[in-house]
Each structure stands twice: as structure tokens, then as C-alpha cells.
Amino acid sequence: MSLGPARRAVLCDRGAATAEPAKCGVEIARSLTEESGPWSIAPRVLVQTLVDAERDLQDGTARLACLTGAIFREGQRAIASGASPSVIADSLLHLLPRLDHLLADEACAMPDVCDVAEAACNDRELASALSPLGAALHGAGIVDVREGWRSELSVQSASGFVFDVHPDAAGFPLVGRQATVLDDVSVLVLNELVEDFGSFARIMDAFVDKARALLIVARGFGPEARAALSVNHDRLGMKLLGLMPADVSMRAVGVLEDLALATGATLVNEDLGMSLAQLRPAMLGHARQLLCSDGRVILADPAGDAEAVGRRQRALTSEAARQRYLALDRDHLLRRVARLAGAWAEVRVGESPGCSAAKRVTRAKAAISAIRSAAADGVVPGGGVAFARVAHLLVRSSRGSMNDDRLARRCVAAGCNSVLHWIATNAGSDGRHAVALAAGPAQDAIAYDASRRCAVPLREWSVTDPLSTTQSILRRAVSTAATLLRVETLVCC
Image 1 (spheres, rainbow, N blue to C red):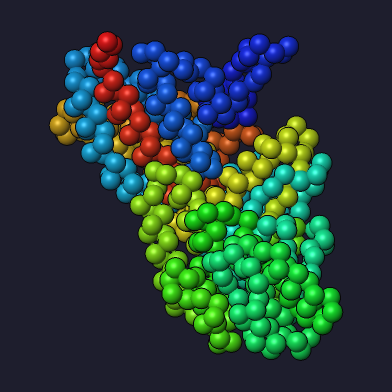
Image 2 (cartoon, helix red, strand yellow; image 1 turned 120 degrees about the horizontal axis):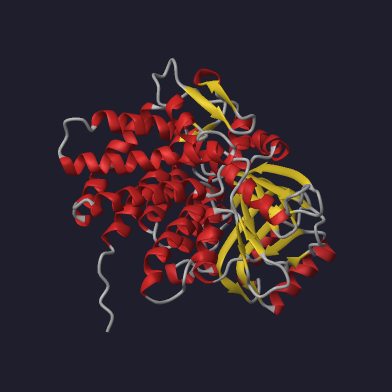
């Protein structure tokens, strides 16, 4: 459990010259899990839960591991006393809606965005760099996080339709990371392999005027088409640029469909009854400016219909919800939504003292996810305080309830208390005392500051966690613990 300033870790012997440390919930669970045999089933369930949480939430695996373990242990005690595993598991699952409401009741005032980011990544410099991103961080914008050079920390942002392209461009060449800029751009989108331009030469005649630029985005360009673009560019000075999406197969089709919609262009696709021979000037899209650099194109102020774009975003979001168990398909659909949202940023993160660039990239993604979740759904007191307060309410409300429900509430309360308990314990303090302080009335409640090893009035507590992330962590923990409690018998043939 990697909670608190004196974090616990596992040293793993993988046959190398030195032992490798595993510090986060996912790494520890993977290190200790057998890959086959009856005893591997329950640990593998836990590992998969942590992996899914890391992918979906970008944060929270340590809290999830603590919660799940404590709920499961309390459930085992109840089973040892004669309770039915299936009954306890069912009672746990029946509590889930109630837990969401209890956490929502603990919502507090939204702090500064930088504080939200720092609570997730524990890196003030990184949090300060991310917080001004604005539109790209809120809603469905794109924020790409990449490893930078050495101690680099740079942020670049822009607005408009953004997509990645194949480095092999047609027309005038793209030189490395040097930016290509075109103003007043007409856009032609083809879900076709372009072999020649004879069928729409009349369209190109309108661009002989050097003040106008034409972007052609297609699945590919044949030798004759490339030669025609180059000749028109080199000899006539026309601003012609032919690009191909970096995506392939059906994902490339998605890019082309979204690009046509965003710019107001008619997608040329013979399978849908639209061929190059039918192309007319009115079927071209438009953008105020094109910026192409390092394999990425940004079209500023695309001229597509806002209502049509909104309908496409809602349809893609609904489809992503249906594909929630297919991670790659869901992520691709959400990225299409982000493209249409028209906000983009790129963050390049290098190493810092005591933290590699790869780990810092992970922290940056956690901070971005926290900012977005907090902006959308609000925040609750962090550092395990919200969980401890929910535990207190569960115990208090269990009096007079049915035995099965009372056992389930006790299990969840034990899990909720475990987060703050271990934060304080790992800091060298009394975990039970820290939990007791946080469980008081809201006006008298006290949070525990592990970094300074002291108590802080809750009204002065600035550490927060996104409400939706906290709810998801608790739901996953309860569901996983219920599954593990059901694993009573295994028949091996």
C-alpha cells in the first residue's frame, strides 16, 4: 500500500543483478500474483481491477487496494462467524447507490485548479504548468502528454480541429518539426486513393490565385497525383498540400468523416455515391488557418455546422459508453469527440530529481484526469478524510438494521477507514486516532496532514479529491471485494 510519506514497497527478485522496487498498487499486485493455478484466481481479479482503474481513472490504485483489502478482510471475519458469503456479497452490492449519495453529501468548495492538480501528482511545478491550459483541460479537449528531453517541461496549446498525419505529404514538402502555415484554406476530403487530378482540374483552376490555399486529405496519393501537386506548387506557385491520416483502416475513415463535418466539406466516397466527377466548389470545406508541424495538423476556426458537430459528439459519446469494456475502441471514440471539441494541448515532460520522465508522464496524466473530473462533478476532502466520514455515517446508520445489511455496512466502513488509517500510520502517527478526528461533526472535524504530521481543521483543509473519481474507486472496491468473497469453491478437473 503506497499511501503516505513513508510509502511501503515490495522488492522483487526478477533474476537481475539488483532487486527492483514495486511502489504503486498495480506494481505490487502484479509482483505478488501467481500467473496460474487455483490460488491465482482471486489475486488476478484484484490485479485486473487495479489495471482497469489505472487506465480509466489515471489515479487511485493505492486507495482502491486499501479499500478492497479491508472490506474483504472484514467480510472474511463475518464468514468465520457463520455468515453466508453470497449473502454478504449481495448486501455489499445493494449498498452501492447509498455510498454514492453519502460521498456526494461530503462535497466541499472547489479549490484552485493548481491545488487539485498538485493533490493528484504531488509535483508543484507540473501542477503549475498544467493548470493554465483552460479549454483543452475542460470538456472533451485533447491533452497529449509525451516524454520530453532531460528536464524539459513545456506546454503548447491551440484551438481548432486537430489530427495526426502521415509524414509522407504530397504537394510542397513538410520539413521535420518546422511549421507549415496556410491562411484561408479550402478543404477537400476524400475517402479514396487519389490516382490523378484530371477529373477535378476545374476545381484546382480556382486556386491558381496564390492568395488561396487548398488542403486535400485522402487515404493515399498515387504517383501521378503527387506529380501533379508538385508541378502546380513548384511552377505555378499554387498553395496545394496533400495529406494522409496517420490512422489506418476504419480509424482513418473516422478521421476523414469528422474532418469533413468539422470543416463543412462533403466527403467524397464512391461507396456512398459521391465521386470526384461530381465534385463542385460548394462541396469544399473551409478553415481560417492551417498549421502543420511534427506530424500534427491544426485547422483553426473550421467552418462546419455547430449543431451537426454537436450531434456527432453526442453520438460518439453514447457509442463510447456502450464500448466501455473495450478499452481501445472506447478511447478511440472519445478521441474523436475531443477532436470535434476543437481544443488541443501538448505537454512535454522530462525527468526531475528523484523521478524519471516516464513516471512524471504518469503523474501528469493523473493531474489532468483530476482537473477534468473535479471541474465536471466537484470535489470532496482528500487524504482519506471523505472516506472516514462516510465510514462514520455507515456505522451510525447500521443500528437497528437487519443483520446482513449491518454486516455489509461494517465491511464497507472498515474499508473506508483504512485509507486515512494507513496514511497516518505510514507517517508514524496513530492511524485510529486520525480516523476518529475526521469522523466528528463537519464543523468540528479535523483532517490529518501526513506531510507535516499534524492535525488540521477540516475547514482549513486544502487537499481534495474529485468526487466522481472517489465514487468510482469506492464502487470498484466494493464490487471487487464482493466478487472475492464469492470465490468459495473451485472444482479442478
